[in-house]
Structures are given as structure tokens and as C-alpha cells.
Image (cartoon, rainbow, N blue to C red; front, side, top):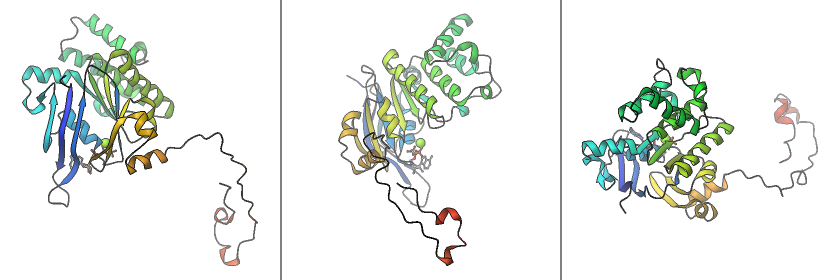
Length: 296
Ligand SMILES: Nc1ncnc2c1ncn2[C@@H]1O[C@H](COP(=O)(O)OP(=O)(O)OP(=O)(O)O)[C@@H](O)[C@H]1O
Ligand SMILES: [Mg+2]
């Protein structure tokens, strides 16, 4: 079966910097996403690992230096007019800072109506309104609270969910979400990640969820790609990777996740320190630094 989108041994080098050959942002990555079995694929890696570069390559915003990105079997660089249009509809993006997408002089309705108009998806204003209302409700927003407002009148989480609704309007096959929750608080993060999970489970849309946070990746994803310094460190089903990580970087990521261990005895290891009056030459130091450390 031909994948919806595939990266075939894709590399990207950006010119510039001090090295003559430029900076290697992605090296020999191979990945296939099939439309038939929608899932959430997490892309995890430290800052500068190449995650956004991968997103931009898959969206066709930057061209690979080596290898190819294919949409339904055709190299993105060789898509005809109609194929390109289909690609633009099938693959949508949600970014970290949704504010950049909005025009502050237009009401929020504008960002929702534009894609419908561009793709001729609504035959009347009333139908457009109905589709928009449905998409907003699908991400847990009330249309009457959102429509008619300007972007700055919404909260960050609402703006981000409007972006998810916008992506949903086009009934895409894949949504590439680059750090979609890194600018929102913990409760909203859960809501937005929940909306992403719904896109997959209820609307059959695959999501490439890019994050530096392995914990949220584990919460919502089915599979994971771990990038480390432009290279694919590890890939596989999320349960397998988290329970038996193979690459040292993945092992490090997993060991860094704070866990609530209820069996841990917080009080027992308290070491009793003898309070001693500081040595005379320490007396000028702030009190905080002279007090005994809090028990670990
Ligand atoms: N347009 C560009 N020109 C030059 N170098 C770039 C460009 N875009 C990215 N890079 C470099 O490519 C590498 C990968 O960057 P990328 O943005 O993909 O990282 P990232 O994993 O998304 O990081 P973060 O978590 O900070 O968003 C970095 O070293 C970056 O400096
Ligand atoms: Mg990035």
C-alpha cells in the first residue's frame, strides 16, 4: 500500500554557520505514515535535534538536501497542480505559537472561513457557519463564545484549539503538530492533547506530535521516533520504547521523567544534622546559605 506520506532517507543541511558544509539538521531519516491506520506518532528530542526541520520537510516548506519526501508515492517536488492541492488539504499543521497564524485585524472567524473558501468546501455562508460550529464543538469550544472575537480576546488555549478546529475543517489525513502545548498550562495541555487524541480516534486523522516532553508523548501517542542530534536514535511502539529503551539518549530521557512513587518513604531518611553556629568567617553570608540543608 502506498503511504500517505513518506520520508525516504531524508537529510537536511542548512547553509551558514561556521562550518563550511553547513549545519546538519536531519540525517538519513526514513518514515512512512499510512492513511489506513490513523495513529499518533510522537517525535521527541532535545532542542536542535531536528524535530521542526522534519515537520517543515514533511510539509514541503523546505526541500531535502538528500533523499525524498513523497506524497502518495510522488516526490513533493514533482507534484502536479491537482496533487499539490490534495496534499495541501491532506496534510495540515499546528504550530507552537498560534498567535503568529492570526491576523490581529480580523476576527477569529476569518481564519476558519478562509480554508473553507480556498477549497470550496461550503456552498453557502450558512453551510460554512455550520461546518465551523461543528469543528469548534469537536475541540470543546462553544462557537457563540469564540466567533465574532478578535484573536487577542481569546486565551492562549482557546487560540490553540481554534487552530485544531481549523485543521479539522479540511478533514485532513495527517496533522503535523509542532510543540502544540508547550505554551499552555498543565490543565489546558491535557485538554488540547485530548483533542488531538479525538482527532485520531473519532475522525481517523493521524497526528505527528512533536515535543521535547516524553511524558506527554507517552500519554497520547501510539508510536514514537526519538531524534538525537539530527539522527534517528530509536523508533517503535511507545510502550516498547518506554519500557525497554535501547538508545542511551532514550534511556536518559526516561530516567529524567519524575515519577510519583507512593512506596517511597519521604520521612525516614531524614538525616539529623547538628546545628552548629557558623564559623566566624562565614558570618557575613546570607542566612539561607548557613542553615542546614532541608532533608532530601
Ligand atoms: N533555517 C535554518 N537555517 C540554518 N540552520 C537551521 C535552520 N533551521 C534549523 N536550523 C538548525 O538545524 C538544527 C535543527 O533545528 P530544528 O529547528 O529542527 O530543531 P528542533 O528539534 O525543532 O529544536 P527545538 O526543540 O528547539 O524547537 C539546529 O541546529 C538549527 O540551528
Ligand atoms: Mg522546533
